Amino acid sequence: MLPDKNTINKMRIKLSNSQLDKLSHRVPFGVILDKPRDVKGFLEILGHNMPWDEIGLGKFGDPLRKPIGVTFSVEAVDGGFVCDVHPAFACYLSNLLTTE
Image (cartoon, rainbow, N blue to C red; front, top):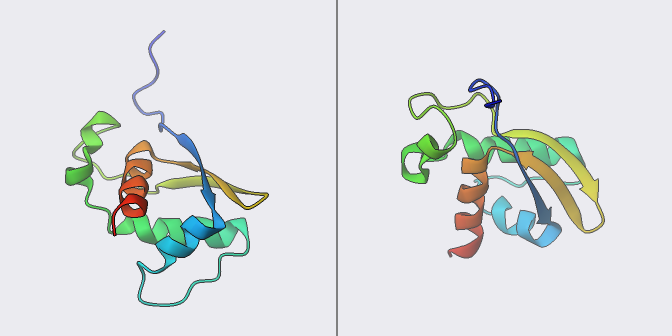
C-alpha cells in the first residue's frame, strides 16, 4: 500500500544544546531554550523564512505549497532535544550548522 500523499513526512533529529546555541545567533533577539516548547517555537521561527525552493521541497512534498509548520514535536533528552521535523527543514538546519 502506498503512503497517503496528504501524510506529513517527518524526520527525527537530535539537536545538542551547543547546536541550538549556534542556531540561536540566526535571530536578532535572545532566545531561552530551556523547555521543549521553547525549542519548538524557536525552530518554527527559523523555518518561517526558510528558502523552500532552494532546499528542494519537491522531494519531500508538494513543491507549490509550503507546509503550515516544520516542527511537529520536541522532547528533552540528556544534552539536547529530539525533534520531529519536516525533512526539508532538517536539510536546512544541517546547512545552517555546517556553514559559517
